Length: 232
Length: 373
Image (cartoon, rainbow over all chains, first blue to last red; front, side):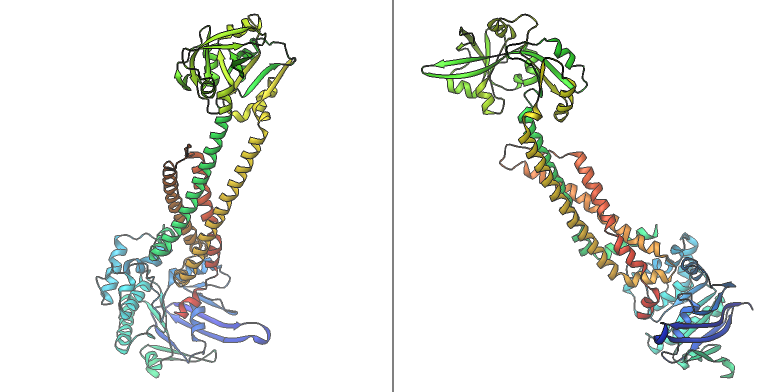
């Protein structure tokens, strides 16, 4: 399978001179299409920094990130925004829905931002995704009328709207109770199996990481472990 | 257009704040329109009462005792700005009653000509506008003082010392006590006979122009040898400098109102930009460009500006309508040009005040927003 995401010796240093802090050091790995992987690490280990670099939200101090076959070093802010919106779906700890808009509008927002028309096909996709996530029929509800679990599901649905190659999820269940956490991971798994979407989930919880097929462990800014879950 | 939709939703999500700022812009624009219209109408009124029913430019013989030709009126009419140019004959007359005497400045001319400058036919308050041989029109103040009425014989002493008798045909009100006391009108022949003038001998040419403020320029073009040109603006310097001062202070008030409106919009939008930092960060994380995010606030400003200006125009008309009930002998007329300018400035000010909030959105870092919750 082709690699959807390649990190090649990426390094991130914050600040300059005496105050410089090395957040990541020579991290290299590849994620193949349709992989279901996790990045695990303690708080402050650099895992979120890594996710930001992989998601083109930030640029590495050195090294390169290749996304969907395209080397991203040297791309302008605009080009990175474009590539990000075409290939990556984001899910965060906080749902980040826009409270001024309905569920349908929130789900189709990434399409509208990239200038795509929202027609019958998109309407159908929204309702299919909502069904898949067990919250069918909520299209017209305002985002702030939903429960925490429902909001996170809408956020996941939004991440899937543009059929991304990979979903980057940063502590996606950090704000949910155990029942909802399990439900969200089952949902990720079924999306991965049914739609073939790759997942890279950042978590501090090893138990959560063990639900994925591959675990990348980050400690003190270095990649210290990269194992298939069968061997863990 | 997505930015417009988002701008609308942002405004709608804070209805109180939105209503307040629209009200603020509305009041500002209403004050602009009202003060501007008030000052313009007031000045038009003042100018009209000063020169509305008199000559704007007068051509006189350079030497006393000389006369000028009626042909000068024909020549003056060739100037495009000139609407009326009439030859008149003037003389003084003295009304003596007991041991009191009242001087009159008598203008003689063709009735139609006189009416075209002084608008007498519409200003007659008693009797009728008629200038047959031997008839005279006098002002209300004079008629009251001399206790004379329609049909009465008026005995005057002319400059040559001869007595003359006229029948009062009408009493006019020119809107100024001095004019109503001193001016009187008779036919051209009566003055010609009294002064012993030939057919083409006149005391003055009285001229009106379409725009009273072009009189100085026209007057310069009418200069010719042996003729003295009198321009109303040169004769009314104090009034004109008063009007200029009034315009200046009115402009200053309007400018400060605009500054207040601009500060109001800018601060509201700046607050809105802070309140919506999270949303802007989310939109950027989903791929929205800095320029598109900045446009949201530009469009918010445009919506606020246009709505506020529309409300302001409505409120301005309401104020002008309300003023019509004030116990003053004066009407405020809304000027479409002034309203158009106020509206354009209002929208432009709104757009200009979105610059800072629009810029601040480009500094919103999506990472901080999405990780900060």
